[in-house]
Image 1 (cartoon, helix red, strand yellow):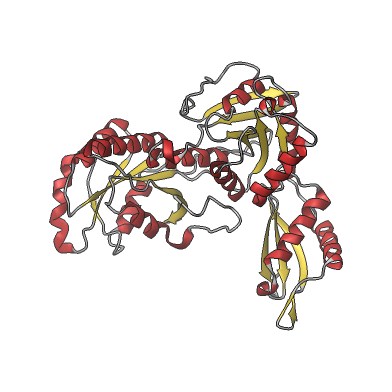
Image 2 (cartoon, rainbow, N blue to C red):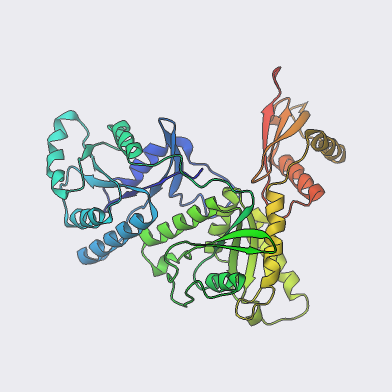
Length: 440
């Protein structure tokens, strides 16, 4: 089930990031081995009254002039509208209505998207009179809050939940493999989609942003049904405003969450960039299968072992997802495009891999015999047994005498042992450690 996306929009310095942090609390996950994802966290899943939502912080906007500021706030609001199911429009109660607020309100009124108007910095009941001015924005009844003092946040979340639709997400269709095509601009994503489909269904252009929205295209080959989700590229921060950059990440996130297998398209003529790493981190963090597509291979000057050297570099640059296989293609000539779907099917099968508890524990016994568990202060880790609890990705739980004795390096060793034994290429593996109790 996909969580509805709720965006926090507003001009700079009204408290968007403070509100975001208060609403998500400690729910933002930190994963050390996914560089580029957690340093600039702009989204998090949170829950209110049993309803889960994905909250997005659009962040601040830097501008040199008032005209430029209004333009960028407008741009931010536009992208929020096309991405989120609902928008929290945050304003500053102490400053009153500004031209930027009026501009955003105008855009939101035209959008017909649900808008919750939150008036921030109303820190005490006697300041409630500040609220009435904001009725003039014409976007509904204002709700008074103080993000820094956690005042009125329950009322705000009540209003958010009221405007959302739950329980109508995509149903899982085991017969359809969903593929997300991801990557920064101009790496050839649309051309790869066209090659896979065998026809010009997506406009191809060298102008970043041609693919404005995700475009779903179903097709069937040799009896296997697929759905391709073609997404807009993630732009460089230096070339586009921060608001738009942030929302391009959210577009990618939404596509990743819907897919079974992600194709991360990388320009083979360039080094792996921070943006490539960030997208890879999103894929890994969401537990999706992944194939690294090194496109424009026809433009690379070849020598002895060129492909092997590139693969070694990929393992180094994207070390946190070394499980992802790579394919070297040319969307322009069509080279190796025909092999891509075979790889997708193989990775998908690995994502839904299941193993019996008996066979898993036989394997666990073998792994422990090869390398015994670590000890700490004279106490050695004992692994009693393991079981698989879910797929997409394959997820295991190990029951032990004391989870604190499990060192991350030994846990990684076990995951690699599982992966190698079952040839689980292309899918992350998740392993959780639990103390053994009488009931377990």
